[in-house]
Length: 382
Ligand SMILES: *Cc1c(COP(=O)(O)O)cnc(C)c1O
Image 1 (cartoon, rainbow, N blue to C red):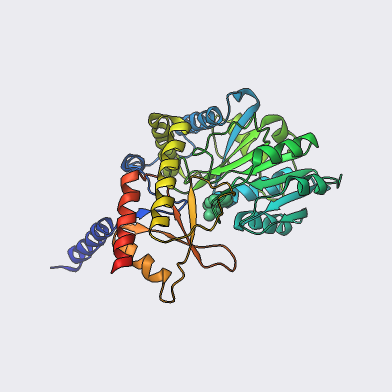
Image 2 (image 1 turned 30 degrees about the horizontal axis):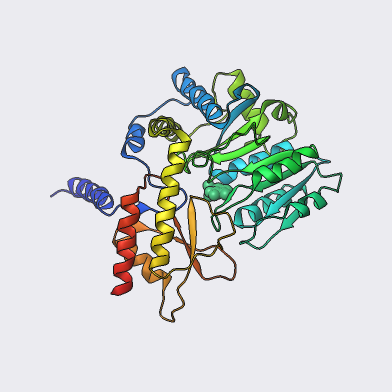
């Protein structure tokens, strides 16, 4: 055989082997996507072409329609990069030099916002809680006695533990004080019903590869137009300038300022259609909820305790379990065993606590949860 054919065979074999070894992602994004979402990435698109830009406009208006029953006052901006880039784009584009932000932090993603704000030289007040605790409304009221605070931000589903922060109640306090209200709804938007006009959110951030079930490559910001218009010239970064990105998309019919992740955008459009086909956010929420409830009862029956207590609101997205109280328990061994069986689970992220996480979003159904529980049971008995 000549070298060229040998190389071709090797490349083809590797690709075939990778498909053979595929697993279900039980991680909160990137997550397992449908075959049809992956299939639409087969062709190339020109990032500056009208046809492609029309697709972008279609996506933007669908997102707004999904976010609220009062779409006129809102707009969607798509931003290149992972979800964190979109969070950083908001923090770095909406707070004036003399502004100050209160960041509610009860997990790794709240902590990341604090880190970003400090790095951007934004004046920050951090309201910090242990990862298993929801914020106290009285503390927020108290913190807002500082009149110089102009913005408040909070994570909705804290993916660190899976807890759901009470954004409705917090938002009421924030808006009563007339502050700009920023919510990281990265791992809940599309999977948990919410109306951003009812919640009076000014900037809501999410990304392609979470509950909408697209592939990773961009994030998006749903924003109240009048708030965004006030942000012209405030950005602390060129690439992540939210106002400029929005303005270009608005003025030029869906054009991104710089190269966009074209395949990812096309896949996201397909994912949006599939979300509608499923019955919209309410139906998807119900599927996730069923998955999560089966997962948590099944795991508890297998002897795993949940990290969040019963009084802490648990999201239908991801659940954190304690290591069992056994000297010989090894998360790494469980992880490897499950990977062999076709499932990837997630290590824990809670400080000082031995725990691991299992996500149940994406192309994941009750049978998958049943198969996972069986695989864990078999592993535990072996
Ligand atoms: C996934 C996620 C992010 C963004 O993470 P990336 O790795 O940058 O995509 C931000 N906040 C929350 C709550 C998340 O779940």
